[in-house]
Image (tube, rainbow, N blue to C red; front, top):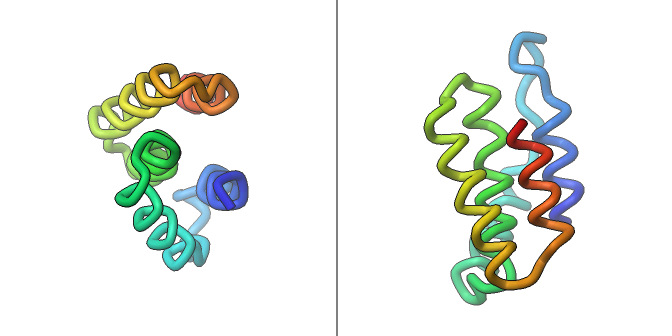
Length: 90
């Protein structure tokens, strides 16, 4: 589900005039998982939340979320998620 949400939010162009992708239910489910097990899901939620912030021009918030995702993924040993967060941050 993480990759699906990330793909949908990252591929949406804010300037296209299209409605945002319908990922709210999936994001809510991911937030619940992150609340119950932050070691496994917290960094993923940070990446997912960073994408709309970046797209909407909230650069500072997006960078803070990417930083949190990178640090959390690194701390918990999720190298693939750390790499994704670093790539998305660019």
